[in-house]
Image (cartoon, rainbow, N blue to C red):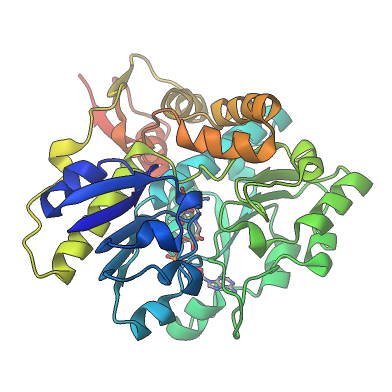
Length: 383
Ligand SMILES: NC(=O)C1=CN([C@@H]2O[C@H](COP(=O)(O)OP(=O)(O)OC[C@H]3O[C@@H](n4cnc5c(N)ncnc54)[C@H](O)[C@@H]3O)[C@@H](O)[C@H]2O)C=CC1
Ligand SMILES: O=C(O)C(=O)[C@H](O)COP(=O)(O)O
């Protein structure tokens, strides 16, 4: 078999090599011509798998995307053409939650607020939003949820509509998929009326999809009144991000919230397993054998540390969003926005999830253990 794989997918040779020849290509350069003769296509979010690309599907039997989002895939067309398909739901959800928590820690340090005094509104409570709610809940942070599809399916009367959530929350986190139409469409879910309704001081985070938020309107609001705190990992028209909006946000990163080593490698493994199922073959390779050890395995807190100090110490040691903000800024100054956006993602440095870090506590009191576990670290009580 011949397998065409995006250049930015780790362990593709290790997983897919047993099936045949693996060819790498930058995702934005994949065309019908490059697809010809391939049996399997493995992509990331930057490759639209649509009628134009599938012109070259002369032998294609299976498409996998090593991502959670599937808005770049014409799944209906794949079904019509009898081509198997799989995505990697949940693969990098922990990584996105780490990103959001690191951003919140940074803003809380800069502005001198405590997360425990804030109400966080989560829009889209699936794998990412649901895990974020659990971790915040563990820290006794009040969470409000807006997720109309789940509210309907599960009869959840405690979920709110988006306008009520905007009215009540101090921090709003968008984790919706991009859905173009239908009852629960999310294109410009944060539209002019909702962006104008944001209270001064609101923290707005978008780590879902850029098109879920009307970027021009947000830019206009920030130009008019610099009274919001904004964190954008996803943008309209990536990689050609609006420079003026980028300059105005507090934390701006190039769609890397889900870029932990753990999340990316799990995505590859999930697509490998799905491909093997599709072809009726045994999936013998396991990620456990292939994943590198984290650079930092353990932190020992020798004496009691106030929980918030301990959290930010360990979170920063594991993943600090500042690294991505500063590095991306350097890349875009050197290469220009679009080239810098893609180059930083391609050369992304190693990053491990909070759950890979073991925190050893010599003394546990004042809810320290609960706070550390609640934040996602694995905790051991030492002697
Ligand atoms: N920035 C990044 O690097 C990453 C971004 N993502 C994006 O985040 C999205 C969410 O990821 P998951 O939580 O894993 O997906 P998921 O499919 O597990 O959850 C999405 C949730 O959004 C809800 N939803 C759908 N329409 C809605 C609406 N109109 N209003 C409110 N809620 C709505 C769904 O009911 C579902 O519970 C992905 O679709 C992807 O686009 C995912 C991973 C990494
Ligand atoms: O999983 C998703 O959905 C994502 O948004 C990816 O983590 C983003 O990575 P790329 O596919 O754009 O490299």
